[in-house]
Length: 528
Image (tube, rainbow, N blue to C red; front, side, top):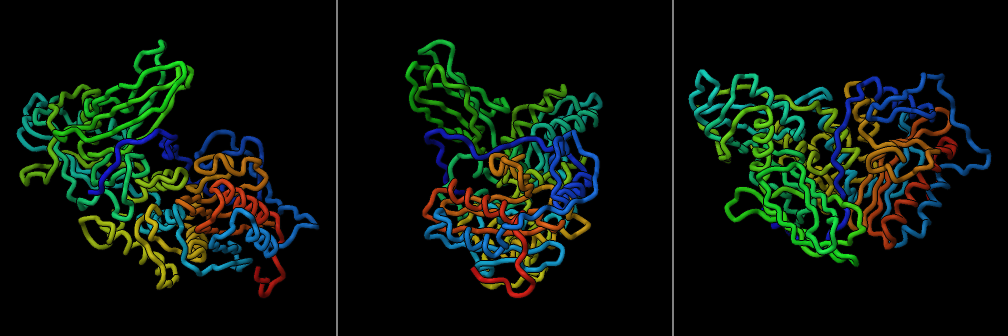
């Protein structure tokens, strides 16, 4: 297992975990229409299916200013941006409908994609399973089930890697268990995680920290293997700070050693596995200013199976089912018999969460699951990477220099060409079977997810996947162009000397120009 650094100065978490509401295929088709029409109206629904949908109108061609420079000149200006000084840049701009290449720069050069890597597992998973697919988790019982609903034995969870098991879905599972007649489980909960191998962190991620974007994978996990910590100053100066955890479980041992001061100070946060392996300690040290607003931090779990079992136990207790605190992790006994098979959320919802909020945990769970489904259990990163490579090749892309190490893009060894990402987007967008769900999963510029704070003027509606690592910025997606067209773009920037915000601004300005710039005359477009 990779070593985890549990301490460090506190900063805002990069993980945003929120519920995603089903919008349905109709909304996804509406998103396609909106892209083609470049429609923008007050109350327009976003991909989460919120209210206020506009009445459908006849598609209008986007106006083109007579002085607007063509796409090739827009690309040339982008490549001259001061923010890109010293960087290796790959760019592709294609027309969705015809596939015509409108502009390119080092299109076939394999670069580090960062979280644009998630486009591969999103498309591959939807292609392989379909958007309505659900993963099942078998629930077994060991021992005698007495007539009064008392299980004189253990309730076993056979982990199958479902990424959608959060507190709310585990409440539903607890309800199903209660409805089977159980009212007490004397032997506690057992977890069989053998469907996955024992590698919880990809070796390329070393050294990993306790930050939630390094959440460990497992055959049975809850809440994306993460939890929330809220820290607030006390009402009185000199008193300990207030620390609240979500979910609140006996699994955690909380120690609030930080104090409230007038002048404030530096907070420290340590998350460590308890010596007996029964849970984790959360220790807050240092000081916080009395006038500082409450802060929220997300941290990764160290013992995903025990944490998930603890969440399930809490939900069973909430349903009135008494559960002994014992947790066993290992192979389920052969004598255990099936009680039920619990279905999680549809894959379409999981891909939405993956892409809109760049959820690394969901990406890696799906990558391992895809490998196991194609090549057999146990689920491993090697099988998952092989499965993603096979998917890219099945899309008609052959690139011997391509490197696929993981599904989330956290590995700095990943190497993918912009032309590959553009081809995957085009192929997926045109697939009736899952194209609407694929497009609806992409964040909307200035509206939601990882693009909520970007392109906020709303002049160019885009759907695109963001990506960031150290000195790596990427953005790949779709933007409506003039004349009712839709343009696919993929932009990978590696090794820029400028700050990430400056690189993002340059990328955003270029994409907005793509929405207005006319295509160069048919034929060979000018090289920048």
